[in-house]
Image (tube, rainbow, N blue to C red; front, side):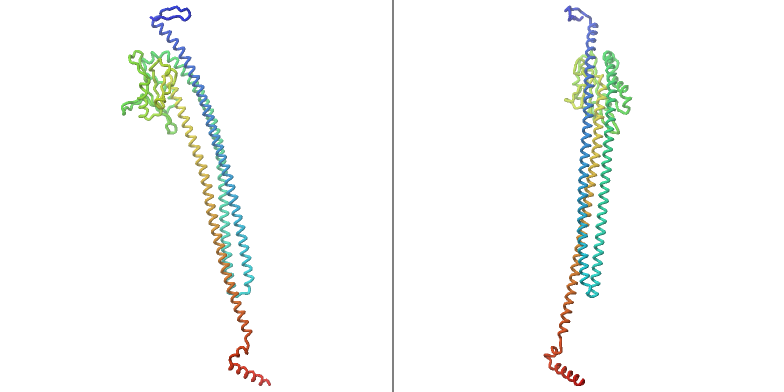
Length: 464
């Protein structure tokens, strides 16, 4: 018999064990329902806050990356325009210098032609041959320079067209990514509403389960109960998921169940489950902490990411009765739950892992875009390098042509000096021939002087 005291009148009365247990169950059920409702409201509020925070962060990150890409593309446009203007101005300057040099050389050649009109035929033939070779060399270098300029202009226009197409592609991808984000946000809202409805149904179910738990678990073990819950509620929506008994005891120990799921061939979640239960009449009462180390060892041996202890131990401990208990401060990625939270923790861990998988895919997509931008920069640098190389080769060829022209001019100048020297010698020889007289020839030659006088006498005598 139990004695109870009325809080109103203070009278004491006795009740038997059955009545006392009924009163305790009524009070406990009322408090449990209130606590469950409060916890569900907290979970709902927290889930909404996390969802809004994740959406805002994703949108901010996407907008930041888009702005950064636009700034980089604008900078590349300015750099390409500057390089193109510099190359065109340099080409214009070189053409101007080339035209001026050609005009100067042609004027010089014309002057040489005017001065050498009176020279001998051999000098004229050599000069004409040299002028023809020089003109051919100039025309050849001019054509090569024009071809190089046209090639560089075509390459520059092709690079600009590729850049414009890349900008359009990036803008279209940004619009597509934004629309996908909006669709994903709408899907998240619908999924959240469906989860809330599912959770409410689960709360109603577990309220009924709580009232029948003392009799249900006697005839049905906790493992069978959890397996049945998974097959009824999660198997239809996760048909490819792996949820089986852990029968591998090669290392001496094993867990109860292993849950794994994958997407596109990549495993994104794995959970090791351990179920613990005992009857109320058991003499030695165990605690949940007694099984945490073994569960962590099993998780590591089977290479699972999470570990979950589904326990009916310590039924009066409010820590475990309040909901999902995170014990990651003792063992990484480990949780302790009551059976009514078996389905919710799987769905929560699955959604969390899927979010991380989506972020990973977005990161890979962003990385591929970075690679595209890097390839564009490398193409621009390669274009600049090739343009500079062609310009250098053209400049060297132009310099070689100028040197050849200078050599030809030097050679022609030597020919001119030789002809002028020959003309001077002929003029001197003519002057000497004109100054030569009979008197000068016979000045130191008496015999010749006598012969000339006799010849003169005979000539004049005959005439007389």
